[in-house]
Image (cartoon, rainbow, N blue to C red):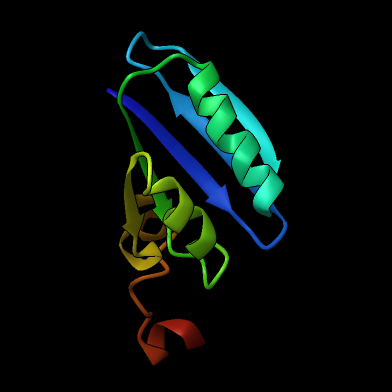
Amino acid sequence: MNIIGPDISKDTIDATLHKTNGSIHYIKFKNNDDGLKQFRLWIKGNRIRKVYIGMEATGIYYEKAADMLSSYYTVYVINPLKSMTTEKAGLTVPKPTKQIQT
């Protein structure tokens, strides 16, 4: 299974591709129309038949990428409060007031 995990911010898209053969590829694009075109060309250039893209819903910044990429690929938009990274950081479970004071 080929999986791309783009990290999308206001200005950039940092994408990591995990290929079925175990290789990992990283690239950075601008978060604009030209950058999204380059992103698609990069995917095509990696010669993969099927790819799944999973991105966090980062405010409004992910919307254009999700919309464009979903025209060509299977795209999953993930709630950042449900992602493993957020859970590991302890950001989904508020501390009780007593614990904060100590």
